[in-house]
Amino acid sequence: MHIAINGWFWDQPHTGSGQYLHKLLTSLRRITPELRLTLVLPRHIREPGALPADVAVVHADAPRGNLGKIWFEQRAYPSAVARVGADIAHVPYWGPPLAVQARLVVSVLDVIPLVIPDYAASTGARLYTSLVTAATRGAAHVITLSNASKKDIVDHIGYPPKNITVTYLASDETYHPRLGAEIDAQVKAKYDLPDNFVLYLSGFDIRKQLNRLLLAYTYVGPSQGEAAPLVIGGREPAWGSRMFPDMRQYAHDLNIEDYVRWIGYVDEADKPSLYRLASVFVYPSIYEGFGLPPLEAMASGTPVVACDIPVVREVVGDAAYLVEQDNERQMGAAILSLLLQQPLQEQLVQRGLSQATRFSYRKTARETLSVYERVMRETAV
Image (cartoon, rainbow, N blue to C red; front, side):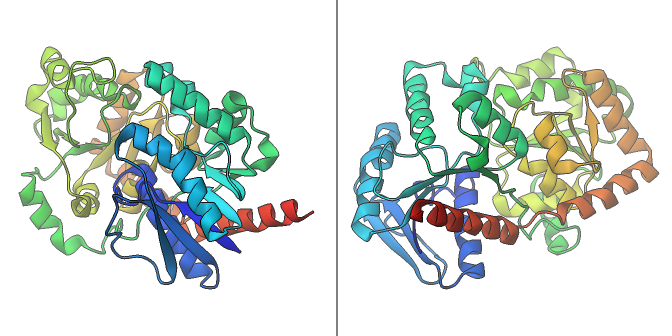
């Protein structure tokens, strides 16, 4: 069985799609050394770096940029699949071709533009979403990351549920309560972190709902803000657009600037330490395909507060303090409870560590391999 994998995101390992691609390819090679794997890369990725053993690389011509990405997905990648004679073409993100000379498997990590129209507001975004939606309907099988996302694919794309398989993500082994902790003090000094703090480490677009967390801190700040400020990590966007309302100005308007620290871009290698050092991790997002940060925090031994949405509930189980959407008072109370009640904090830490062990990329790879085998069986009939 020969699998040709679309590698457009190979040189972006710290994005969601890039991380999924790297972890999946590495894990597939570990569990099935006999599987024939070809990574199809756009020509601009000239040096792919460290690859798993015996993974072939084929380059295909495509310009950079959004138009180049579409050309790669619809023309260059299918041509490369035909050239290498692959049995299965696997696109590990929502960008499948309309036609390809192999059995098509597509990983739809989320369908955000269909669920939240603001994410497909431009004409180009709407056209692209229509293109990949139509192409997905022609896939032999769809892989997604959660049952919540599976429901969205059925509801918004109309793809049959019997041909959708859920394969969960997992936290990297570097997210651990003790392993790697020897660099925690160095990371603490690097970002000038206090002894106790509440951590937000995610994106800044509107579905992430950082505004709700800032509102919640109007309840936390007066009593605990000086002892445990809110630390916000991540590369900040150009503030002030519809997708990125100005959160710095909002913190100023709420009069909580003294309780908020913006630390900017966080190196990937520093994230496990940041989680370990935090007293509480908060994840106010209202839509995700999976929601990896809460899992990373739990694996690091940090208690989690998150919005009670289906996908987060699916990932964290009873191991996090879940609060109602749009209820900043409840979120503030949850943060205060974990800061002030050590028994509750310890209980969630232990539950979180246990919950995190349920997820592994080895399991993800085994379930993906089962999809390949099923597709081969069904198309052989």
